[in-house]
Image (cartoon, rainbow, N blue to C red; front, top):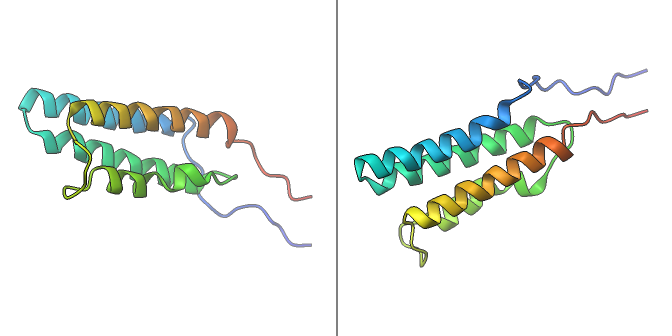
Length: 113
């Protein structure tokens, strides 16, 4: 018999909490230092962390895996969107909801029997 358990490393139980912390901390530092790109960087970094967490889950979530692509499209410097504080806050709130959804819905172990 073959063992079909995943060889991926185990995540800490509350790894998803790093996503909103990094996103909102980047926004706060950007507001305090009056540098808009710090908040954008925090949002992009936290989106890649969310993608990594989603990849290491036993069940895969396509939305969480594609969040970095959405971040790059939204925060593209040549794009049509305004990347100000409001857009950064809305994006950080959105990925927070996605991180909570990922933790609640996709954390169950997959049984291959």
